[in-house]
View 1 (tube, rainbow, N blue to C red):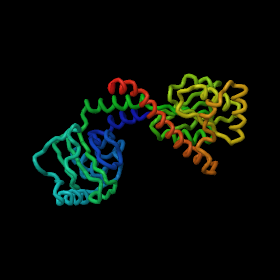
View 2: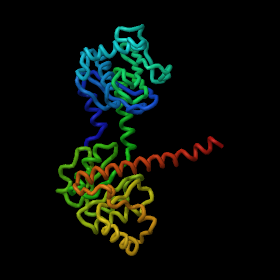
View 3: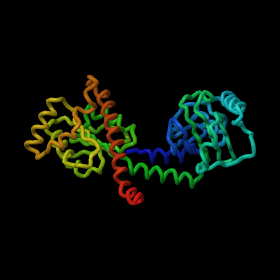
View 4: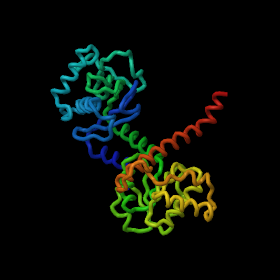
Length: 340
């Protein structure tokens, strides 16, 4: 199974000289949050700070620092015209500029409310302070400070360590069933910042899964539910309705799940409810947490990719809400003590 950490390590080991482009400060509406970053080499990029002209400008500046020609995304003439236009407005400066100064990410990100863009550089570090307005062809309305640094061995190690920490804290999505919808859902979920695990009783159904997806073959899928991490999202869509019921019942017995969803119709849900309450010692409160059909019923389209897209959005929303609630609960006692 491949991962973002492995992709990051591969990029750092094969890209040659690399610059780190990081959002150091934001004000107002911006494409990405503070801390978002990308890596830029002479010929490739890893990650994004939000795209658009802001990102093109940052790529161009990073490649100038790396000693390459201006980015093909901009083209030299476009880049120089853009910097000249910014400088003409009174705040920007194309290289060479005033005496070099290094601005760290701890400096105040915004000084004044003017619409000018500032570009400050030295040999290993550059800061772009850019308004997201007509000057650069974006209309977000906010302002972004971008810090660009050349990556040495120490910084590369820091990036890998941070990525490993982030990856270890990602939530889990367990997909039970690798049929048509399961395959489509796994492919969609694989694009999101989560750990995706597909569980099946049939070996052939696990073939062709995305490389970032973990697969598990087991004769008793319901047993895997018990050992899943807290905050896991469960999507149940096997080839066997009786098996679906066993898995859903196990998931609903847990009170720490982010999401429990089962594919099927209103009739299937009603049948499960009757069985769950009468034969599985389930409660009305537990049943109320079941999402079925997955992806909602507003869109009347049963094609697997459509169901997968709707279900993935539903699952991601549930994970974000659950994560925010968990963080609030975690900090509440400490905040109460500090307030007291």
